Image 1 (cartoon, rainbow, N blue to C red):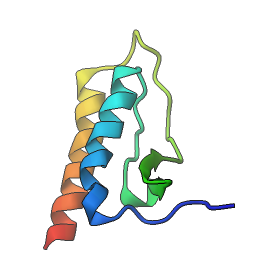
Image 2: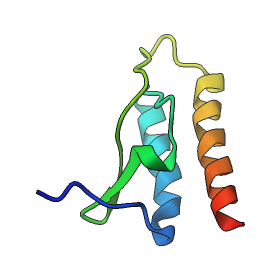
Image 3: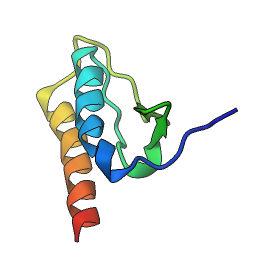
Image 4: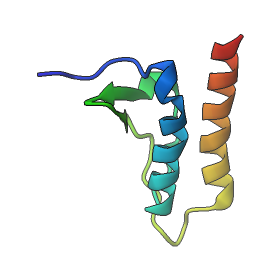
Length: 79
């Protein structure tokens, strides 16, 4: 069975889009590093969630932290 591969540069935008979808569904990943994302059947899949936060507890700060981690990761890979 295919377990996915490293997310290619051409799919980096999907990292943000899929993370935003998770946030809209009231999930916070907690550790959205490249090691916790795979590319499977042409789509980015987040794996190894650190936590699930219920809808009434999810904060903008938690969501921003997720996005900041991904942004820093991608900026470092550009260097």
